[in-house]
Image (tube, rainbow, N blue to C red; front, side, top):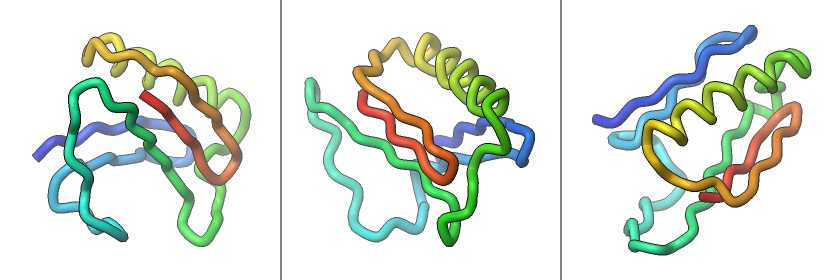
Length: 86
């Protein structure tokens, strides 16, 4: 099971890539294809406490990107959700 976690002021966000409850089947990982990740708060609740929490999220995301040796083409953070395109 592949699991990553990001710690923030509001707790720890766990990302599990296997055995996760998803609204649809996972798509095939095609070499060279763009991937869109969306993280949402439950019932539109905030996933970030404040701007410093968003900064810590981006710092941790940057570490993971370097470790995984992948490129992020675009990202946006909002109070109750985030989008990452890689």
